[in-house]
Each structure stands twice: as structure tokens, then as C-alpha cells.
Length: 141
Image: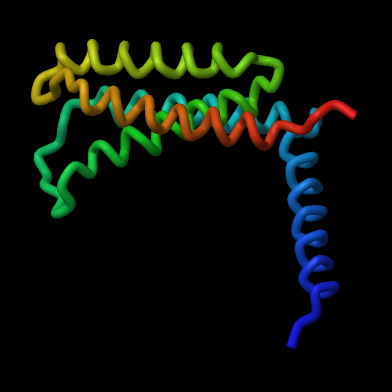
């Protein structure tokens, strides 16, 4: 049987570990590494969203919406981590603008099309990243 002190100590240990990880996540010495990750992610995202469509079928319905959610969520997350002084509304604006531009360009690529549903998936992924950045950003002490 666990006591209340053991549960409280476990919660405190988890909280302290989480705080430690967040300090590392936002430590200035990692900003260059986050910028490299961000730009590699941006290049991969643009390549995958703008290459002509390949003729394949996945057995999962709407899997492309999941790809949009994850891809643009990662873009926004890495943008916020790479440039921590960037205000969150700017992270949202830049990420959303890229999503809109991708959809407009896709409308001009053979076998690709403009999709509002893809844009909604982009925005959902971006919003999830913004919420994570908001709650994980360390407070000034």
C-alpha cells in the first residue's frame, strides 16, 4: 500500500524532472541545433507537400490530413524552439502563411489540388504546437 507521502514525492519528482527537461529544451546553447532541425524540417515539409503526387493508395482514409497536421505542427513547434524570442502569434502567422501558400502552389501542380480540409489540418497542428510552446515556455525568475 502506498502512502500519501510516496505519491506526493512521486509527483514532486516528476515535476522536477519536467522542469529540468524544459530548461534544457529552451537553453540558449541549443538554439543553433533547433535552428538546424527547423530548417531541415522546413525543407522536408516543402519537398513532401510540393512534389508531384505519386500514384499510391494508403489503406487509411484521410491519412493526408494526419500528415498535414503532423507536418505543420512540427514546423510551428521547431520554429518556436529555434527562435524562442519570436512571439507566438508570429509563429502562428508564419506557419499559417506557409500552409496557405502550399495549398495555392499545389493547385498549380499536376495531380495535386487546393484543399480547405488540408488547411484546417495545418491549422490544428499549428494550434497544438502553439499550446505546447505556451505551456512549456519557462517563466522568468
